[in-house]
Length: 541
Image 1 (cartoon, one colour):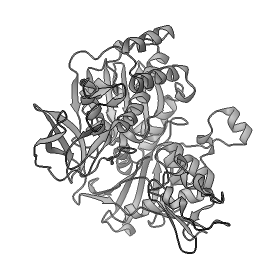
Image 2 (cartoon, one colour; image 1 turned 180 degrees about the vertical axis):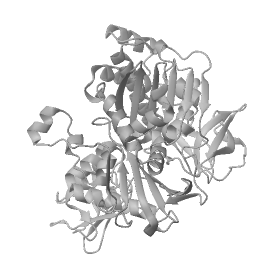
Image 3 (cartoon, one colour; image 1 turned 30 degrees about the vertical axis):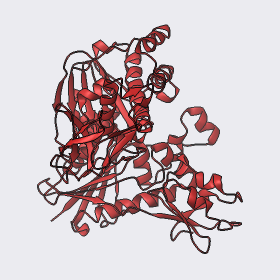
């Protein structure tokens, strides 16, 4: 028997299928709970890679990939093909390609630093050469990136969703940490990527978690709010009913006692509920007695969590606004929306439209699952698809918008922060837009037709089902000359990722570490001798 392995390298974690190449059927699925590199977003991963070196970052990623594929329940000696999909940063880390050109945008920045642009076109490579524990001769299929920050995963969402064939003006978004999006107007496609932050993946949330078993993924209304909790097959099931006015459970459901956290879509549902009622949410704060919204099994969100979610909502709405402005069309001229990724699958599309994750004019909404992993499966079945994907990527490279330096994006995102955190009225929001020559934001109207194309973000888990890989941790270690062993760095670590041994050896578990987004361990050192970037992988000191 011959096998193939499909991989989705995401900012929030790795997902894999084992595939029987004789009939194309999925055998098993394995996913991680988080990314192995320190940090919560692609910029953290980029900075870590540049600071500690490309090889260390690559080795950490490959250590996780090999741990994942060993849990697929197949004989790895019989693997003949591997196909992978993901954003440019994650695929570069996987392949060991330098990421300097991704970290520093712009021709002038590249010239000043002597940075060479890397090619990220479609190709067939050796899976062994990148570090995978598979037989010699195993081929690795890598689809192309579209532009600097729009990668193969964005191409996947366009290709798999039907976006490219749609005749009407339409938009597609992969709702994740690095929210890729595209707008199609006639034959023209405009692309962009909004740094939405980790809240959409359930990260940086008090009780947050990725979309997996035990995650509260939505709230359904039935005289009170019923929690929807993902079961062992990552399918939503009825949990407890809660009254947010009383902040208590009023009825126990089949998933009672089984909630272990809340994922990003559950937070979005809570935002939608809170913003419906003035007595729950005012000027950026929850107004409940203890400042929290309580769900079931001790799970809650607080004002900080809603603020984190609001940043994601604001970034995505600003991105949608920006693409429409660059295309020169109004919201009313864009009615079809495609939603991809785990968050785009589990979120209630109507609630998403109400809070701003979906353009208010969208009246036809299609919810797809993990299109990145699905495209990797397609490549295993038909390697010649690489040529088609390359041609498609070439055809849509002309209309890319860099949100980081775009004036429209800056204007709208500033407005979003004012609206969510300071209680800015929508009338003022729109008046400011008009004064800046930007269209107003209309209110959602009418009932959108929602098409759920899949029941979960990974539709087919295979005959052997799902495995969640917990042990993906690698460790960075080192000794700092002048260290007194006071352990202030250890006590300061907010994620408890760091320990100081009796011999003053510092050990950091990468999967828990916030990396460059934190550095509190380094800042708190009283002797100023702690240098995070000098830590090295176990065995490479």
